[in-house]
Image (cartoon, rainbow, N blue to C red):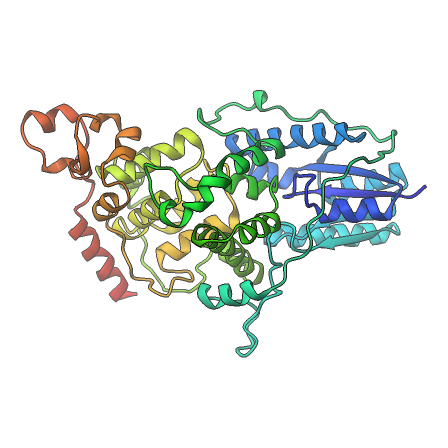
Length: 459
């Protein structure tokens, strides 16, 4: 009787799961394992929104396994130690896991390989599980670089790559009876969760996708920037936790075809692009990808401005609306992420790392690759080919929320202002201005732009 261990990480699903599929094909019995990694628990999952969503995902995975005759084993500690301990308990000789891209994921994989080899076991690492195309499999051949630093040529090459086959969810599996498990975590035990946080887990993810897919993907190209329409897929948390397969989403979108599906595939490629950058340059999670020697304002020099930005009271309605959505839902519309990041990093000229850290403290989809590298893209230290672009929150608000519906949804102080005038409440006068009880802008846009240009000229 052969036994294999499948270590789940950011692939908390049964559909299209290559490590699980390979283990079931190779062994008579399979032990599905999730380790509550003390490093990640301490560093990243102190965040209530991600802890709660993770609890939903693990509960859903356990339920799906039990429906098929299995169960999920939960252990706490260091992955290498817990995997080796479980392998010894079950007599397993093979361990299967999905490849990661962060510096910590690389260290975890190496520690696993070393520890397992020391006790005569093998580690099998599978690519294209967390991304559609494996990081490092697409490189600019003529330049000798190990990754693409510009999106458009990456997208062309990425689009030419054949996708791996999809794997169906298993119909049944056999799990050894002996090894014990800790209780599956519960969302109810997590305090401080955002009121509007979505439900996690594979079933919820597939329901979200099915509800959005038909009409949503058809109009995605025209509507994904519509703040009030909220026409994005909202699948980023499901991709972050791996309750949906990016390979499956690309396959489905390409099979559908049309401008909306093409635009959706392009966004999935952006996700892969950031993952391949981080896989090649892990330090970009906390240091400038392109060093510009910027003289950022810091938490000490810009404390009041930072607090106003975090609390959604900058005096710029579309910025404040997006920041309040983040606090309420643990999620923010993609256009809102661009606007709020540009406002902090360029209009207020605050170090991008301060903003990235705040986002990671609330976002349920707080992904290191996408969060950090999107912040760097906006801040001008990353892969943007126009690093000095500054997004004007008034013009952006009028363009992507022309009637002010999104602003009024999240900034009730301005609910009495009709139409696009809501984007410039400082232009109101008399009783109308007094009634809205909304703060004055923390900085004039011209002043912020001048400071940005001056700092860049000195850099």
